[in-house]
Image (cartoon, rainbow, N blue to C red; front, side, top):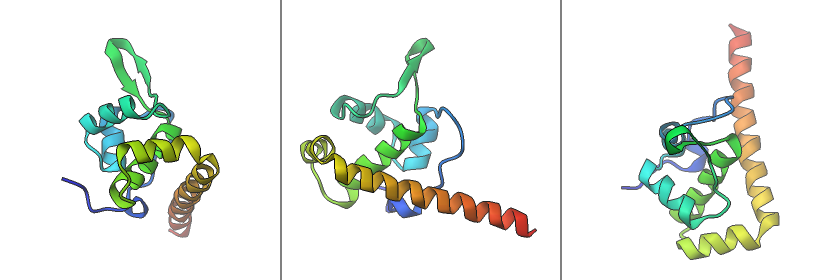
Length: 118
């Protein structure tokens, strides 16, 4: 079942270097088996694999998952259409990623402001 939350309503990405598949699943509202499938379908999604074939995602991977999720679940693209969009429209990807980063930074700055006001 699809999670009705849009990318704007997803939780902020913590300031960490690596994320487990479970953490990415929670941050992006996508089940772990879907993440593993998307790794096969989208060459841009390449988490680092360590001991025991464990996946470790970096911040840019989490942003890519959110972008793929948006293309598939919110914008109605097929897997093939989303793949073509990600491969062929790099300028749009940069804008979308920049928007996600700005939203993320704003949430983090608002959290800092909240702490400072205490």
